[in-house]
Length: 332
Image 1: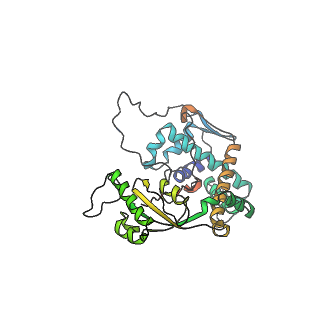
Image 2: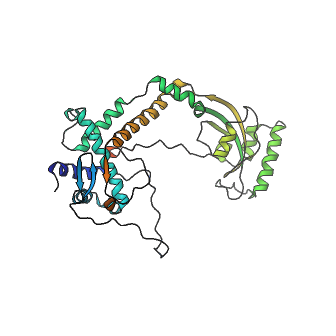
Image 3: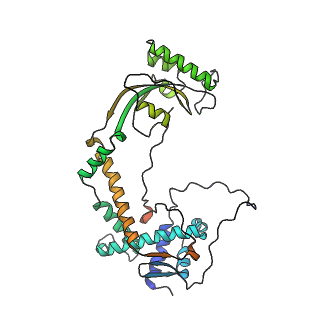
């Protein structure tokens, strides 16, 4: 039998948790027809309604309770919840909400003006906001991180000349000849020789580079840090001495001749806000993970299926606790 407190909690929580699908999941491709070689997707097992399928601390939730919660999920997300994996992921978020609400109760956050209902997810949201405000690293921790990751804050100012080859994603210039990889390499080596002999880099870039954007500016790529260029380009740009020319560097865009004009590290003062945001976020995530790990929670495998690969669950109200993805904006 469902308790009145649980029923009060379940329906609004279902809508809250299902408002946004997980950000880390890509849009699934069209599924091919099922053949004898392709096992059908697992279907959730039907268990008796009175069976306890989820235990969180001392609270027990039955199959009927969970089914009631899943029925309140908006229709566009309901199909996802029919699989054991979808149910398990949903229950994982429920556990997080419950443990955060319990912490919020310990801090008397339900007495704050922002807490206007008896729903636990609101209290969990209040606790998350409290944690985000109070979980701060000190200057010593931020400086230690900076000292250990100085190379991440290295900035390079560089120019390049790009010679594309067949198959490159860079558009072929009007009336230009399509070059093989061998021909493109030979042309890049010829251009590099001209530069070594004293030709002006900017002039040759305007005339020869297949990167129309930087070519018009004499090959100027501006200033960039780690993670902004394709790996082959970046490896050379952060290594060669300032003022020297690279040998032709192959990437998916073609062959690059790189000239680094300056290289400098951002100071701690410049990057401190960025470092503190990163470390504060990690501290919040660790606190939430520790809270969840400290709360006994058991899922019935008949109802939820076997455990899936772990993924970062969203916080209350759709807040996602995930590492910030590295920037990957390759420039030709």
